[in-house]
Length: 103
Image (cartoon, rainbow, N blue to C red):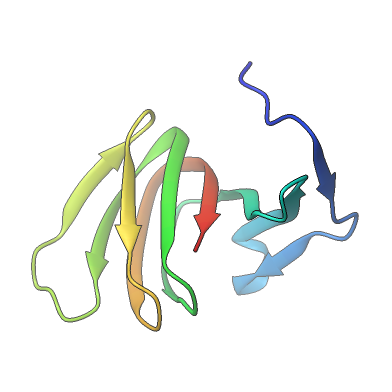
């Protein structure tokens, strides 16, 4: 299992979309923020404040970025980037485990 060292973890989970997405916020020793979570099979739209890199640990999904018509498929071991002040639609076909890197 891959680990993230030297972190503080928020005890309370972030629960979105009626429990279809659950994550925990992490803060690294240098102040970097991340979240680690799971998205159950569903189609959801997420809005971003800061730019994000979604690192997929397990599962598979299809992503459509705001303003784009092309949908791309991503699976475990891959990642995708989302600009800040934007959004993306995600269709999860196999329960998705992820690390979201902010900024």
